[in-house]
Length: 395
Image 1 (spheres, rainbow, N blue to C red):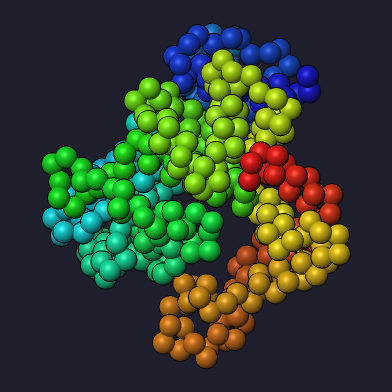
Image 2: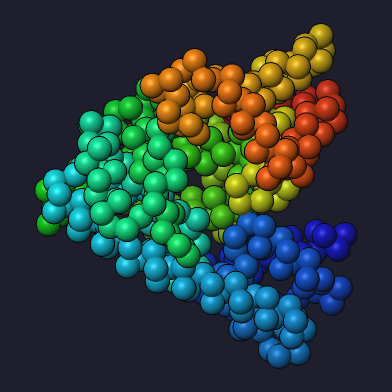
């Protein structure tokens, strides 16, 4: 087994042991702890892994420098979780008091399925609201001391340093998503939370379907991380026997996700349970490990090119050209999110292209040229490989 595979295998073992509160096997002799920390950090799991590392006998733990990296990540996660927990409670009370309908999503609910909530780090707090209450939400959030970072599109972003990033979703996916029509009926599926009039929740079945759609969105666009698979595993572990499996199957079949969902479940059980996967699941695992928690720019580039039929021999060059045009000259809809005054002054679109380009060169020069390099260097073989993997996985 190669050294990189040693780290990946032991990382999965650490996470699975913590998820089940099982004893840990000693690490392999040739394990590179620094590399394991790097991998777990890319997947936002180093804070969770720290709990496992500290369970090992002193002689089996990493050296002090690496151990301190794990401990630093855990301390940061604890501080972030405490701030987010307090903020979430404050927001829910405020929405209820101001009669704003809201439906909490994703991490702020999933984290309670982990052995400890700080083990499941969250970059942001996601809440669904009704579009007609946009101005009320904006007024309330600004009144609570948040700064409006982005406005418009699928969600508005409000921030409060150092840890708070709130995404207020008017839609769960983009309008052109294959799951847009299905998720547009989320409010019809929602139920009032006990003790509230304006706070909603989804049934375990509907939340599970949403969880799989959210995972799919990331997986196919830029890749998703180990944590997403762990979310699904822990959700099934907690709710599996209580859910209407027939209903879930019907919903997944309706949105053509049944095959992919089954492959995700098989992979999750192979990693964290007692299941076994096939060659396909090994390939999916490699893709996920390479992705990091939110995917990679290169995977994102490949996904975008494949969406534009870049897997067809004759279209690769032209697809790259079209993609770069979209990349550097986005449409009015997208640019209006970055520059809200375009809603009133759409004729300034060319000016904002130039302004955005100048900012990219001055403030994000490295990332800009990396994006260009990714587009130019992607090969037909890479496009075909990912396209084929996604097709076999059920996408």
